[in-house]
Length: 637
Image (cartoon, rainbow, N blue to C red; front, side, top):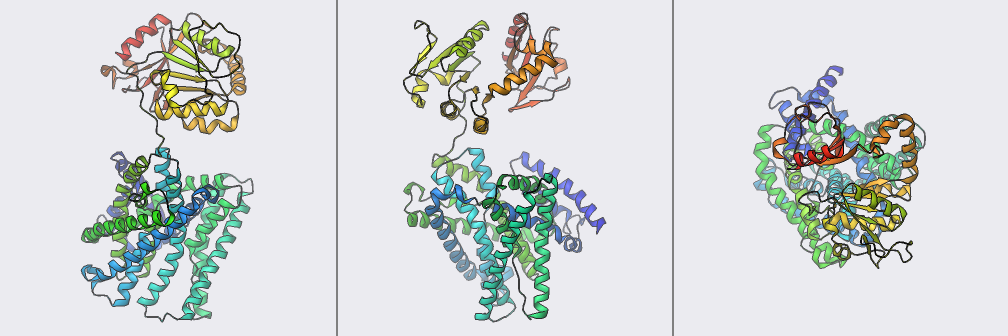
């Protein structure tokens, strides 16, 4: 077993690197992981044999538990209450129409699907309801990633997020029912009242164990254990649920002559839900899950790919494509019905079902369970689901982004209107500090204006042309554009946090201002300004940091603060195409100039002589003023 584990982990490391290659070409990471698994599996290189996959099945169980924990952790009720009416109706119609239409169409089209064409009628029904159940699964992590990328917020976005996470909980419950019914049909067991009593008891028991699991997680998270230890405990508990399920299944067959099956996925998802909604550890639990998820996904998707056959994948791809369009159709019908039933805004009517295409871990996890239980046709079933998931991963996120733009709920940063740095700054807030800042900027050849929005202003010459007066303390974007803020390179906000945030958000979404500097008043507001890419100054900590630098490195502090009259600092963007790709050591800089930092794509680089410049890099130089201006011309020409 140790040999198998070491060999597989070596393949998993390679799989992760190959997946990153796929990401460069905008393919989802799971596509690279699955393809690597296929190549390493029996059908190509034979590094991972079928018997090895069977022995490593416990890794799949751990991965499924973590996926379920993640789905449960994303169902946070307090954030969904405002749209609960629309969420309920959309969830119901999506599940109803997708399940009923898919079951019906797959059943009547069964004669045209090779691997189920010759099955008995009951078996065809079983396959149809299993397809319908998995079609309902969604990927909350993909939805959240798109929403965060687009900075989306609004009633439609809240509905989509609520339906997405709620459906994954309900899908697990529905799967437990469908799976039990499918097994009864295929094994020719009678479906009687006793059957349904046992099924209800299994679900109730799963809920109880899920609640207990959530309380155990809370107990461990209440301790001061290291985060890594808590992550290990979470993994062990997740795997323990599967061990418990196997024990109950084994002994129930001995003593009850009936397999009493609790659902590990349902237990895990309820456990994640309990610790998220009924404890103070929501964020900490989410961070632990996020920390272990990448490794878990590498293992799970690589193993999933290794279990596939290339020949089977090619043979069923046409069916998978047809099923993709079937799923799209059922989602559309469910979306239309959901908008009408909830009496929601009619502009959502034809696009309400489109955000739910993307699938990932839950769908693949359920298909793995089916493939293991029904080996006669399960591999083809699983392969079709994997192909559908890959198609959905490719098309789902772009379609979701288009929908969010269509409903106008995105808040992306606007493009800058500046063709070149104009050294123009606007300071919001008329006070002694803003006047001093304006004077300092003008000494360095900047044009500075001060915006006053307070009713009571300090004594200052009314003839000062730098001061602009606004009547509204929370100005609209039209008022800001009236003072040509979209053409300004830097804005400094010295108002209250609420006013600062209002202005910063308008600038971010409509003007794309290059630098927004905020003087923070309350520490708890740091994150929301940080999300807008603002440069944040917290006066108390800034003063401590400044004094610290004067004590430990007075020469550097004097230099950076401009207290040395012979030196200055500037930021210069690389716009000269001739400098693209050149090494720093090849720049032949004047001896009285040094490079403090290089900023690329919003990240500061650890630089050395062999670092190559790229167009768009922002270099921070220190040196005398005359030489700095010469450098600006050289780099921006």
